[in-house]
Length: 302
Image 1 (tube, rainbow, N blue to C red):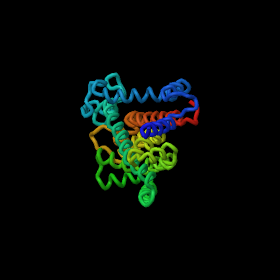
Image 2: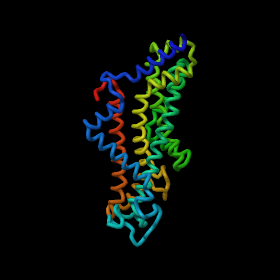
Image 3: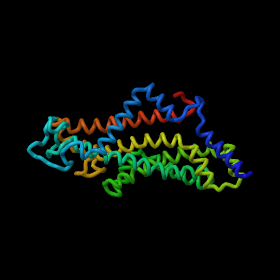
Image 4: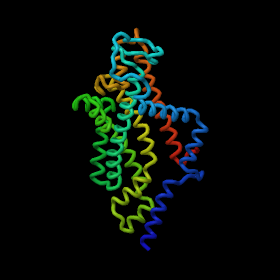
């Protein structure tokens, strides 16, 4: 009898999270969104091309990212170097392709780290409440009082400028936003009937948190994670431009733009192409994030 009631409560939990007034699955809503909005389709195609460029960087061009040819320095785009060469004769297309790996890794790891830590703190604070909730939220308030980029600069300045410390800074930066949104979702879900049913059947706190609260709070967390990837990539590029991100000679879009600022007049392609890579990648991720928000919110039409 107890198993039947528990399965019923689980069914209510799943039914609540998957409720859709149009009776459509996520895949169906996503296909409708792609058909209705060509911008979303274009953003998806562009991101797939960016990922393929990063994965296939060794096969995309015959050059190495650190290969120098001083005889061809500051060369404009040609048939040999499609995006030109930089101040020491390195192929710009090759460095952008290899820089794709670095930038995407920073964005994904920074957003994922902030999501894991922030959601953990927010869910525990929302579920247990009391002094722990007050402590977590006050710490979050203090962290959110700092402008994000200044907080990242402070952390990297203390730890030192390198790839790992940049990811740590982006992770810490992302914690407050995820903690707040997950706490709010848990507060709205934990008083639902299926949670009370699971609690009355003797389900442990961790079972309730993982099986009911976290699962039914995933929609806003997924959307925020997507947008956080774009924010992390943009912030990493800004930090690289300031010299506090990935250090040369490692190819990274922001660092490439930073070194190119000295040649804006005589070789504008050095800053145009990395800038375009940053702009269109961040724009595409934001467009997909907005589409995911519309798809995962059952109150909005596909």
